Amino acid sequence: MKKYFSFALVAMLLASTAFVSRPAQAQGPGLVSSILNKMERNRRELHSLRAEMTMQKWNAQIHEEEMSYGQVQYVAGKGRDANVRVDWTRPARELLAVSNGKYTLYRPRLNQAIVGTTANARGNAKVNGVLGFGLNASGAQLKSQYNIELAGEGTLYDGGPHVVYLKLTPKTASGKFTEVWVDDSGMPVQTRVTESNGDTTLVRLTNIERNASIPSDAFDPKLPSGVKIVKS
Image (cartoon, rainbow, N blue to C red; front, side, top):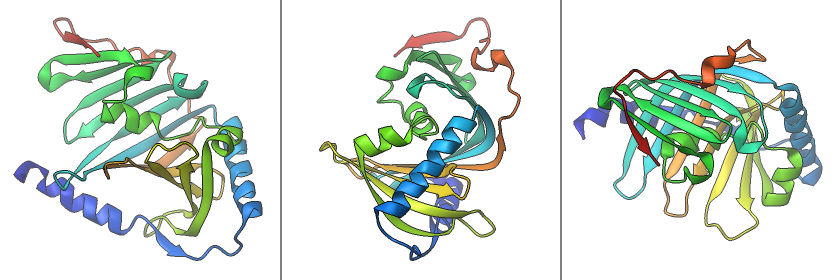
């Protein structure tokens, strides 16, 4: 438990400042549609992105939080086929690269790389947390797959952007739901997925560079010789 203490402390601070809420000025489907239209426009205009990423995971079974920090690079694609790279720096250095429906999670401390397809990544929290951020989800997809509720608006954190807060409940009985905090440009800057067992994954983007220049080989990691490859 000791090794998680400092990260759990930061996690509590992150959760406590995650949203300073006040009632939305106008309720109803019209405002929700307006927000979804902004998100759709953002999706169409967002070709690439570079940002700082924070991931907070809560395990409801053992009541433990863990924080991860890194930098994400993103190039738009279709659905889960978008190109994504995350260079995690804490609590351990790891590299996650996703391209063409496949992923590589390189863990230098273990001299190991886990490889697999995004379709089979359900059990990998680091992969799913990134893929679940929803930058590529269209307004039509969201409307068809979720019942969407406007839950409030406010400041995401002290000194952070103004956001509106949406709660998305799947129309199918999956037992989980997603929360999205959307800034005034239509960018989803924070999401939290709650699983049916109570586990949550919160992902926040800060210092966002829209349409940043990203090298084409960023998503094709060159692994050192001797790395053990584990197929997932």
